[in-house]
Image (cartoon, rainbow over all chains, first blue to last red):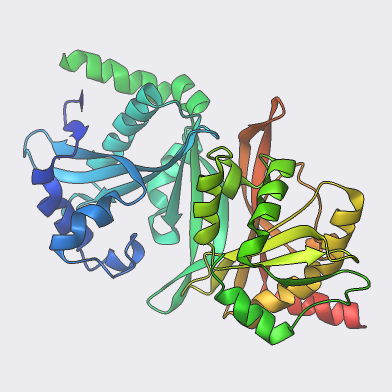
Length: 186
Length: 187
């Protein structure tokens, strides 16, 4: 578990599933997420949620106690030393920075607890701005763009491939600041 | 391997090549020992199979999940290369994986039949973008056609091979570019 002044970052519990389901049911983004609009009924949600997934961590707002988003570690490849992450934010919390703070906690947790050299993520073109700051600062890199990789509501859509290396994360000033702020909480 | 997309693949194109000069055919369950041998000979480059090690039952299980495969054979009908079409779904994309035994004759046969195999992949399924992933030091199996693939993603230092990290790329061949290559070849 990682705590900052604004969030608590912790493993998911079954009691969180209804909230995760609610986040994934948001119609404005349901088409672009892993189910491409075919979110299973809640009774079948747990196995779908955990498919190819090693761990799920939720981001909880400290003041509200509400789960504002979550991050998945999936498709870990031990031989390559890499894994993939997906980031989900509740619609009412987008733009607040809470989930991106969760991403910092996630990097600290993933590189601190798994033998990974790289974390990768797919991001649809309309969501990639969330990573732009990190790419400008150098914690994240754009490894490429899969042009017209998926069809969303009939439109071919680009998918950006984002990479965060252990080396870059461990050396980043952002990580140092993040951990300084964390230390003040304890 | 369960035959679905490559069944269509072969129905469209029939058996490729003339057997006197080598050719290709739909993969069958009896080809699994050859595929295993091929994976071991290029290990760990065929990442789909090698990423988890070479325990045979794991390879068999992975092979059973693949929708379609073809085997390239030499002039005496010995298998020398294998191609699979995977992840061909509703998005109009697919993953093409193609490996030859690591010797010049097998690799030359693979290059020779690559255009026919790619034509069959595009003809057999509604694919608009065909992806191909390779390590930086993988053998070249597409010959002149490789110029029509466009690299879209590079994963630096993706995995350790023989003591050094190699990068891995994802390239795409669009139906338009492939058609262009065939028009160029016909002229």
